[in-house]
Length: 325
Image: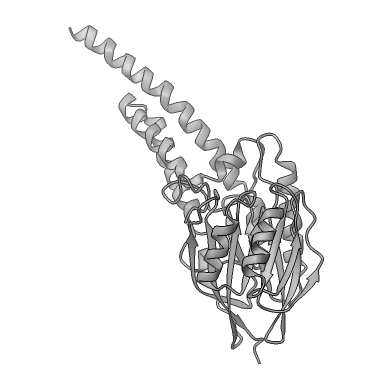
């Protein structure tokens, strides 16, 4: 009985080792890329989007290592948990503008998924009354709905309407001057708004998603958004839309490193998922953002559920500050 019990114990320990090691190894690859500040290649960018959820396989690996009495694996799992906890902390620091308050600005960004949620977006805009509306995946039918439902309240617009996911529209209560947008597979138009006599650069973001095996366009288009943010000079900037990237992607953090702040982060919702809506908020990734230059402070931010789209809309209440002195 003793020998048979020892054999059964060894089998359990061996099975625990063989199950724990692949789990911990997979998580280690993703965490190592996060630590090295690289998005690497497929499937790392896809896993990085859901970095907090890697706690689940890590804890499973820890329990299996404990069951197998595999002490090296146990230490490995504890180290991974510590690194994950470190990286899950919000990226970027809070900051306050130095100048006096100049104007309140409410911003709404929404990916309407091939235009399916255009009607729901129009209803939300009438209810929430944002000053600026950034709309992604707005095709011809969506554009017609927005013109009909919101044209009077939002007389200023910059649009690049196209089929499928390629169209984008920017609506404003403030006077707009068209500006050169960012080149991308999907439309990313830009404009300059006149906010109480102060020019504010507006840029819609909708880079390609990091499709498996095709992350090149995603990297390049996020890089172009980074270049725009870095070259803005002293002009206030609102960069908003579906970035197809979270704070755990190095390409997105490089945009923040130009001095921009994330409105959801500054409004206390740094890890609130915005996609996919079928599993958010319990499970998902925050890939819809409103990014701001230091001229803005954030009073509040919240996510809205709109029927017809796989993204949650983001509403941010901002204050534009004048220059100090």
